[in-house]
Amino acid sequence: MRLTILGGGGFRVPLVHRALTAEHSDVKTVVLHDVDPARVRAIKAVLDESAAGRGPEVVVEDDLARALAGTSFVFSAIRVGGLRGRTCDERAALAEGVLGQETTGAGGICYGLRTVPVVLRIAEAVRDHAPSAWVINFTNPAGMVTEAMSRVLGDRVIGICDSPVGMFRRVARALDVDVADAWFDYAGLNHLGWLRRVLMDGRDVLPDLLADDDSLASFEEGQLFGGPWLRTLGAIPNEYLYYYYFAQDAIASIVEAPATRGEFLLQQQEAFYGAFGGAPSGAAGRGSTSSAAARWNEVRREREATYMAESRAATGAGGRHADDLDGGGYDRVALALMRAITGDEQATLVLNVRNRSALPGLDADAVVEVPCLVGRNGAHPLAVGALDPHASALVASVKEAERAATDAAVSGSRSGAVKALAIHPLVGSVRTAARIVDRELEALPELRAVLHAG
Image 1 (cartoon, rainbow, N blue to C red):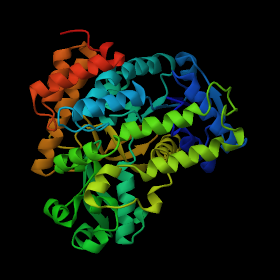
Image 2: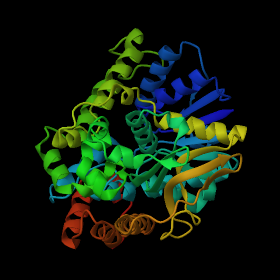
Image 3: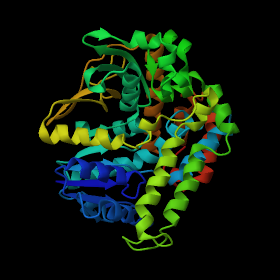
């Protein structure tokens, strides 16, 4: 079986190869495709050293059509504009006093605006060159991108995120139960979902956790939101809802930090990839071949340890739990999804798929993040019931902003882009939205290539 990774020079690619090797999967060939040859050479060097001949063969292919030919699965993990685009998203928003974050608020809308046209072209290429392939979308903002690609690929594109499963593991640890023994009632959009029940032997044990301040203080979501607010909600929100419930605190913490998350990652990754220079695959340039995998792992652990650091600093949450630092997240979900499809294993996974009728209040084509039954015929969302009124209203508002951004990206409309930002609940001002768009257009050729109409 052949797997193609679009964005094959991405920093997390070795996690995928590691998981494939550990599981002795049916994938025999991994094809790396990237628009940046230097990045993919660096990642190939890490894979060559760390795999040491084990696991699937790794092939680099510059031509998209050839990369897709004969593949069974496509992982889409691209970043249009790179980390420099991310830092622009952050600073353009912060300059207006609104949240600058990769997937949430103005940052997510701006990221989506320049990404949607690219992923639509990718979806068309998959349709033309690999019509039987399944596309597993890692590209952020995952919900918006998956919904855009579904216009071309229908249900053959499935979005994944490791936030829900990470939360489930942490909640299970706090409850001292095996995650496999519990049912987690979770629903919403990507980075905008709520855990509403945890069923053990038919009994909801989430109220027990919410009542125990010591247990809540033992994991990230409990530290971020605090017992009083979690008990008020009667649920545990996805960690990204911190940016909604504590928006001003988040903005202040980001502004006070020495660098935004994007700036930190840009500096870190420029140093990592720069060490490989223009070296051919298998050689680490100014670094050494013996240190490629070790250096990658060192950088990865630093990256994981500093995840959402500004939010944890604002709440006094402290460092991350050791179990959250192994980097296994997206790769595990993706491989579980692949196994379920190829082996018809009937697994249940939280995924980003078209709603059908799973989540009341949204139409059938809206991509939602809910538990799905997965088998050889793909992922089928399970009915989850209505969200609480405040959550339902927030989900509807964010979905409309995302769809306005998709429409603007397809039509090339600057005014449509302003609308998408203005109606987002974390922006809420037409003038603010217009100034953010102008800053982005001035800084990013990738966005200027999209917004060419009035």
